[in-house]
Length: 180
Image (cartoon, rainbow, N blue to C red; front, side, top):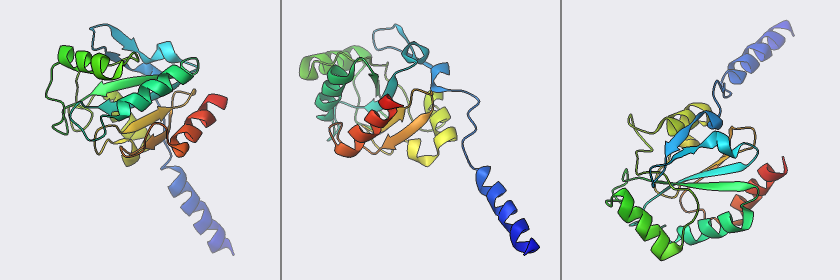
């Protein structure tokens, strides 16, 4: 009996050490905007933040429309931040051309960052933080990977590229965070 208790304690302590140890929150990060202005995540405290890596030559590019709809419908409680990247060789344009493409084709009005890396050693510090604290689920495997930051400043959920912004599962996760 004592051996089982000791084993249980050891097992519990092993698994509990795997939980995220947030020394920083999402609010500690900022991005350079596509227009050159700083995007401070701390400006969005008490809102749900969805960070999405985007590209103009991706099969998922039509998701811009759903992201814009989400931004329009939930603007009071949520912010979408688009992060253009060429990590998957689908965003060869410069910042000015990306901005024009998004505004012309999808009427994008949510904040967009300058083009940057979201994976690898040159990844933006936000993405390194998300990976460290949430695990491999926070690492974009392709464009239009979505990271939901709860009002507590921590990664609440992540969604793969194929999950549309209008999907029930995605919206359920967002609404859960808005109500928290």
